[in-house]
Length: 216
Image (cartoon, rainbow, N blue to C red; front, side, top):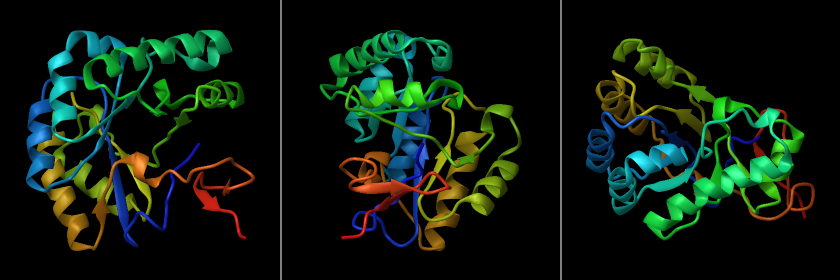
């Protein structure tokens, strides 16, 4: 799995937001990101798309990426290749029906993956994505703790995990953004940091999970 960095597309100090799940404050998050002209990647579950199609449309119209977080939030490690492909495809179909754009990335449910999960996803021409900084907003910790945790842990190329339904995320997010901007970081959607090509030929993946371009 990857926490990718592409030298061509990033400033020397880049940050990425990954923000899936509930719907209590989706519009508020859109507004906050809009204030800073930040485009993020939202990984959504197909069942969430069924419930909140207008929110999916609003995210897309605001310029954010809408990517796959499975159709039913199943444990992919326990599914066959065929079952994984069917589940991913179902979610892709739902997202594409609203946005007109078919997802190319997936964040596996529960952060679970193994070799057969990765192989199944890549057989569809998609890439699995993992985060390296968990805000723990889903634990309902206070906003100042979320801010301290994220700002102290991110590094160039980090993917930070947030959740729409978390109580204190809207309160914490402006301070996090301001702190990282002051440190010289930029925010980009995750698709902009994926190195193209084939693993082993065009890039390698180091022990931290980051893509590194092959020499020569």
